Length: 228
Ligand code: 5GP
Image 1 (spheres, rainbow, N blue to C red):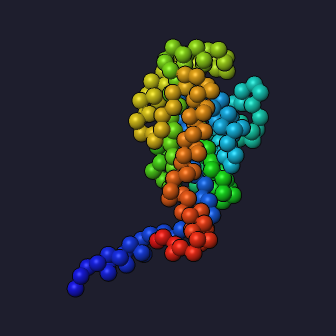
Image 2 (cartoon, helix red, strand yellow; image 1 turned 30 degrees about the horizontal axis):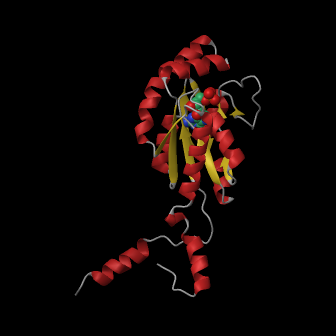
Image 3 (spheres, helix red, strand yellow; image 1 turned 135 degrees about the vertical axis):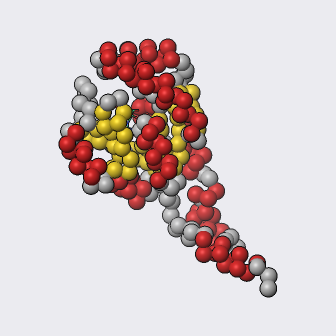
């Protein structure tokens, strides 16, 4: 007997059903501290509709002007440890001596609302998300040079000198991680880099496999048999 029918059956069983509405994409964006990802993400959310943002939890102290629930949820080490124990995080990491984490609830909430979601997380977190979550698109924002990174970090005056030096030292290892990301955007000029980031989001949304539900709906009006 030919093996073809069995193969066909196996394919039918393995193929997940086509959803009947848009399924949000999980975008992971990383860069060394001072790489400019915050500015680019802000620009993206102002220009592209339907992009949600996951507010992380951290044990680092708020900076001047940062607000609870807006920039971060600020927690003590003890509170953060309880959340780890409870399995509340999709990922968490120790970055520059502080803990940072993304909650399952924040991700689930955005995706169930049909929004794309941005995780602005470090390279360790990006690695964890890539291995545990589906439909992840990862983007690395690269500063134009080490000198420019130092200049940006120094100019923004948010860190004490020793903290700044630690972030610059860690940047060397972080930039080497670019090769594990799907996209690389050079942040040498904000306007161009922001446009490129928006293009990535639009292009990922238009991927044929993410548009199957649209195709089905439209093809129905043609009376054409829906493609498998
Ligand atoms: P900052 O202290 O400058 O706000 O953030 C320091 C680093 O921690 C940045 O690289 C930032 O992207 C990262 N970070 C922020 N939130 C999270 C998170 O939820 N998980 C991980 N792994 N890193 C995060």
